Amino acid sequence: MEYVYAALILNETGEEINEDNVTGVLEAAGVDVEESRVKALVAALEDVDIEDAVETAAAAPAAGAAAGGAADAETADEAEDSDDDDDDDEAEAAEEAADDDEEDGDGGEGLGELFG
Image (cartoon, rainbow, N blue to C red):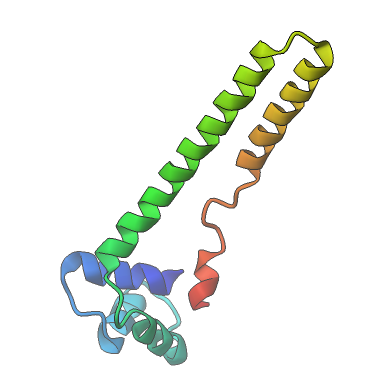
């Protein structure tokens, strides 16, 4: 993850993302730099618009939350419309399952595996 952070720091400061600059940031942070990982990162980011990628990544959780909220609202509406206790129990179970799914999300953990 340190390698990605180094690239983000360079992007934020307006510096070119190249092997020397990434290595410099990592060494300044006290990271034991692996040249192959630096090369892989620089090559992977060669044609990437980092600002666009960050905006897209920030928008994805918001879109997922909106979709999840709509599904929860539909489940709640179905539960209110139901006169049968069995239907109420099923709606409650569906709502609890939706809540459990939200809690099970990895929240972006493991993205560091892309670069080592």
